[in-house]
Amino acid sequence: MKDIRLRNTLTRERDVFCPRQQGKVGLYVCGPTVYDHAHLGHARVYVVFDTLVRFLRSRGLEVTYVRNITDLDDKIIARAKQNAQDWSELAGRYTESFHEDMASLGVLAPTHEPRATDNIPEMIEIIERLIVKNLAYVVEGDVYYEVQAFERYGRLSGRNLDQMRAGARVNIDTRLRHPADFALWKSARPHEPSWPSPWGPGRPGWHIECSAMSLKYLGMDFDIHGGGMDLIFPHHENEIAQSEGASGQPFCRVFVHNGFVNVNREKMSKSLGNFFLVRQVFEHGHPEAVRLFLLGTHYHAPIDLKVDLDEEGHVLGFPQIAEAQKRIAYYQETVEKLEESARGQKGDPPDAASELCRSFDDDFDAALADDLNTAMAIGRLNDFLRAANDLLGKGGGLGKKQRGPAAALALRSIRLAAGTLGILSIAPEEFFSSQRTRAMAKLGITEKDVEDRLEARRAARASKDWAAADAIRDELLAMGIDIRDAGDKTSWRAR
Image (tube, rainbow, N blue to C red; front, top):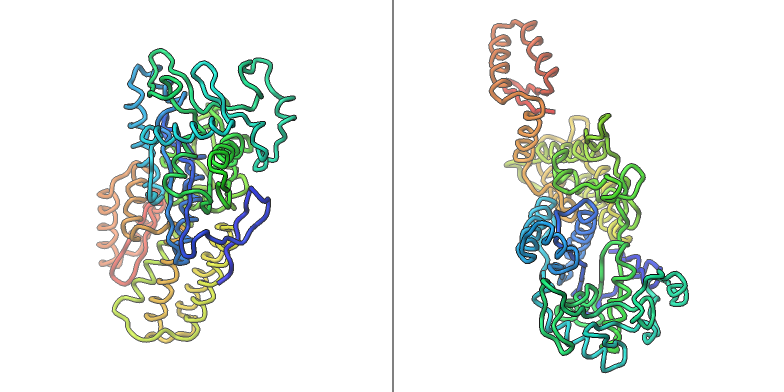
C-alpha cells in the first residue's frame, strides 16, 4: 500500500502521515456553534473528515475522533434573546438538529463529542497556567492572551504581527497590549450565563475551548486537527498559541483544512441571500447524492454549487446534485443486478474478475492515500462499475457458472469502496422506494394510478392487443414512469 500523504497547512507540504503512536490516530475537528440549523458549509467539513476517518480505519488504524459542540457563544446568546428563549434550550435544540442532518448524510458519530459548557474547569486551568507564564494578562475581570509573548505566533497562517497592528481597526479595545490579543475569559455581563473563576464570574472565550477539549481527550502532539479554511486564522492560530504556551510542547502534527462552498461563483453567505441549509438541499436530492456531490471535488479546493432559480428567485433545483442522484441510482442498479447474479451461486471467481477487483481495490486505496483525493476515488469507482458490467454482461466472455462468483467478488469491492466513501448504506430496494415516494409526490400521482395502468397493460398484452399496451406504456413514460419488462414480470420506477 502507498504511504498516506496529507496536505499540512503547518508545513505547506503534502507530508507523509506518520501517527504519533503506531496503529493509532488522534483526530480533532472543530464542531458547530449550535445557534441555527447546519448549512452546506458545515456539511462539507463533516463529510470530508468523516471520509478521512473511514479511510484511516479501512487501513486498519484505530482512530479516536473528537468533534466538539460549541454550546455557549455570543451568537447563541444573541439568538436566544431574539427568540425570548433560554440559551441552553436553544443550543440543545440545534444540537439535535445537527445530529439529525449529519446522520442523514451518513456522517458517523465521533468517538467523543464534548460540549464547551462541560469543560469550563479545564479551560480555567489552562488560563491560569498562561497567566503564570506571563502569556496572558487580566484587565477588569477579562483575561487576554498576549500574542507578542509567543514567538511562533502566526506560523500557521503566515501572518505577521506588525501587519496585524497596521491593519487593526481604529475602534480596537484600548486595554489590549496588541490589536491581535484575544479573549481567554470574558467577565460576566447582565442577564448572561456565567461561571465562577479566579478573575470573577464570567465565561470562556471561543478559542480556549478547543485547546482544553483536545488536550483532555487526545493529549499534546496529537495527529490531525481539521476544519474549514476559515478557521486557520484566528481560531487554529490561537489554539496553537494557547496550547503550546501553556504546555511548552508541540500542539498538533498535521493541520488539514477544507475549501469553501461557493454558490453560483459567489461566496455563500446570509447577506447575499445565497445561504442554504442542509435540510433545504435535501428537499431537492437524496442525502447520499448531496454527500457524493460534496466528495466530487478535492477537499482542499472550493466547491461551486450551481442553483437554478425562477424569475422571483425561488430555488428550482441544484443541477449537480441532480446529476449525483442519477449516479447514485446507477450505483444502486448495478448492485441490484450483481446481487441477483451472485444469489445462490458458489465457486471460485474467474481470473479476469479477480484481477479486475484487485486492480480496483489498489487504485481506489491509492487515490485516497494521495491527500484524500475523493474525486479521483469516485472516478475509479465509476470506471470499475462500467468494467464490471461489461465483464458480467452477455458479451463479457464469462460462462453462466462463472458469473455468480464474479458478481460476488465485484460486490465485495463495491461495498468496501462505498463504505469508505459513506454511500450505498441502504439496500437498493429501500433507496428506490424512497425515490419513488419523492418522485410520485412531485409528479402528483399515486402508486395506485400507476398500478391500475400496469394492470390494464397486462390485460392488453395477455389479449395480444399490442397497440393498447404500447399506448399505456407511452402514457406512463409521459407521466415520468419508466417500466421494465422481464419475461412475465414488469417493474417500474418514477423519474
